[in-house]
Length: 364
Image (spheres, rainbow, N blue to C red):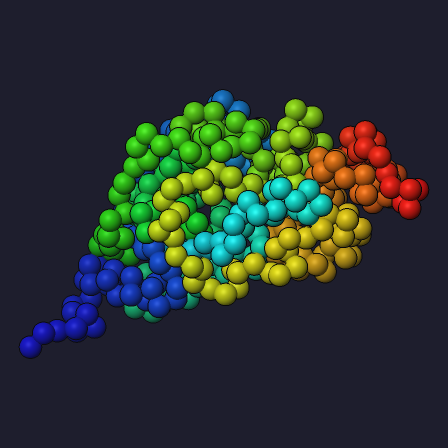
């Protein structure tokens, strides 16, 4: 008589197999387990990246470098690291708005509900299942703690880090949200079949970057990266990069969208990650009119809310300045005296850029 998985003795290996099945039932399409010490070189690479200043003013990266360097530095009792991936493959062309200057381009990952909430709820359910089965300690992480998710995901067999440094999978391309569970359980390895691969001679992601932020294969300089500049950077964006922003007002997908492995990517597992209709192709004029209360209402439940109204409007003003559309001048003028000096500076820059174009007589 053949035994089912549930009939097996509760060894580390059999528990891992059952855990993988539970992860699949929650919508995770990639799953793997690695020992806590599986990526020893990751900490050294992080420190070299920090030493070169590639983290820009993300000072927390340096402040937490020691704890981030290895799972045991964060939690000495951890024995296994469970890594999972949830797809957010865009149903629309990420570049669809780039040649429509009156509209804004928002990074694919931010078009739906905040992925932190979506992934964490599923990850907590998976961790709770593991605790009930094993009684072992668990901690869950979704991009908000000092965890090197991508090297750990590679060590767990979910894929490999591409030349753009993001995780790549033969089955899902690079459109994957990653989640981690640290546990005191000694679990056997379970890896996604066929996950190991390489980028070969392909440099599509490097070529696609509008600002040359991928300064070498597997090395991104945040000081040049549009995602960093529009999301994490708090002051005026350096003048040398403003034109390259185009109409990208939150993040950038160019290096991700260029990857040939995306032809195998699967649809999002959770409808909450699908684009909200009003964010798919928003008009810059409408976005520039948002005050703080309206901004919070429009972006409730969105990761965009985290950067606040002022930084968001700053980005929209750079996009307006790049648009070449004098019709946006009235919206820009309304922000010249904004209480936030960074917003006012961006409005002045946009006005100067747009002043080179004729304003229709009915707008004067």
